Length: 293
Image (cartoon, rainbow, N blue to C red):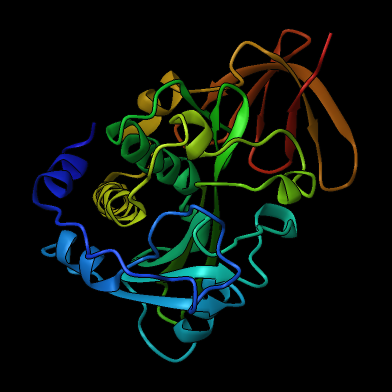
């Protein structure tokens, strides 16, 4: 467990449970209580974060990017019970029902150009994994560049979008989606095998306010260190959770070409390393999948 998560858990006070059926009739049956801005804000006090919880929005990432065009969104945390047009990497849809997931975005300013932010999504993945492990979830792996897996099923995803200003700074909007309780009706709409916290945890009640506070705290810690030293301090920790290393993989490139090889970890900038014909290739983009025998 990360130090940030321990501090959050030690001082957390759960909100009073309320009947949410009238406000969110579409919420999943037997779902956990809805998110409480006051409870989360109290848990993360001292982190210098501005937090807002909304019932419904098109996309938390899209909204923070819109706000970034006219104001500073550094350390702004936007959380939504439901996203109507949530998305993942490469424009994929991220479905979110009230009570069924954690979907939020955090704005962060870096005093460097976007091209110098290599490995940022991998560092964010370390933060999410730390928080989940600190909350009792085990057997987690990280799949390059932005997925958190549990026994090879997708549990969480990260989408980072960048916008530069005129003075050389970059605002990163770090979007996180965690599956808490995915109904069967949505599982068929998701590409690839998925899992959720309820299934991992034996369907016990999950305090999403506490979990969100822990993830936010770990993100703030990781992003602060990343701003100073880049991805290198997180490389070893990421590789300990690497779901691909040593596996035969296929990398689908933006031009639709396919590269076959064996995954060999990541470099200090977070690029995927693949061994092919006694050479080591380096990829900063592309869609990677395991080749089945």
